[in-house]
Image (spheres, rainbow, N blue to C red):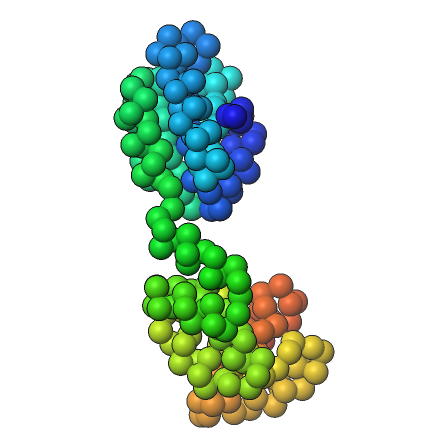
Length: 234
């Protein structure tokens, strides 16, 4: 069953949803003959995926902002989104076998399904098995690192984190591994003491940065301490 989407609901029903399931967007209008031919075909093919792909329909006459975003010049126009981005599409009515090829290309592979199952299991064994399938999978590495940190194996956790590029997420987990600290009000005394050493002591500087990472950007003290660090270093 297709979901009717508007300019107002596009972000939540299409962009946000595409991070968890492929979304097919059917742009149409009531006066469009080929749209009436294509619509039931797409709905039939997508319904056959049993929820592995989602179909939304957007009336271009009523929702001009979406039409402009897709730069639609003619309809029917069909686009597929994954992880917030357009990955495929076509213009005009297509026969059922072509629509099926289009939709089938969006379905997760057997390997992707296995990986998702392992990540959902969330155990050390499943995370290690996931990394056998995809050595650089961030979810598996972060999940495994968190488990290792919890039992004190911080060096191994850092080795796994070192396999992949830094992100906000991995920096926070690495900071936890290096410091073993949980953000609390006592950080002020520690940070003040570290400020005296950050210029000439690399370990002190790393600890200072790690504590700020754990405090996070929403802690009202973080920005002030970052400014103080910059002033000491430069």
